Image 1 (cartoon, rainbow, N blue to C red):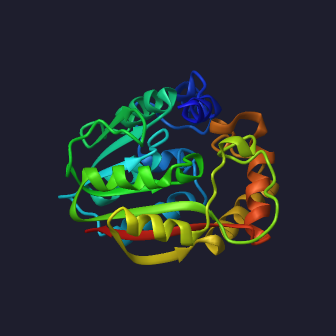
Image 2: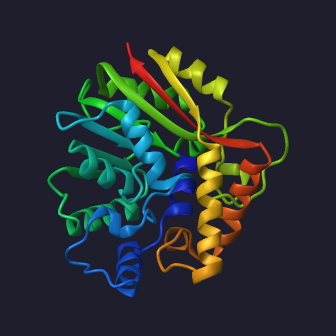
Length: 275
């Protein structure tokens, strides 16, 4: 419980929606009539951004009849992206109350409130009945959860048999000390990065069969390089990771990209099916 409280404090700060609205006005957007793409992926707090979300959604085979659970939904970026692109219904849950509040507000401004709903709560004890969902995603969340066995068991509980579970987490793939602060943790105290083999084992033990696995390091490094080149040529965009991470964003982003480039960690996608 204490770890969860520390994680919530790490992410939480008041006025997140207003910070985004001010940035959107600065780039000329009509904040009363937004589309998910207007946020330029600044609301997708993971390596690879919307491109990685699109790949995961495609590999899960989502469609209009799917009710998707997004575990650790943040401010709702992936949920809005998937609801708009795949036409499915999305329910998000996140530990951080300020994230859920921002998710609801931004989703309403995108006209998607009927297709994407959000709840505040723990991924280890979700307020949903057994077998409620057709699919689930976990996008850059496991690094903050030590008890992944309990996490995967809880996800399996709320999924229908045969449902797909898409995990997209930063995983340990090489030896060496990780530089902190990272986007998900200021210190190692709330950072629980595990190797892919640990995920495979724990998913199997929770009742999942792994169907596919993809390392997205090349995508993340390419998009990071392109973002730096745009910033050098045009100046920093008002819509960027600083909106969620604050003034420490350059150091946090630099640390995670350096660790990926050095082969210490990798953003890895796994698609598993519930037995």
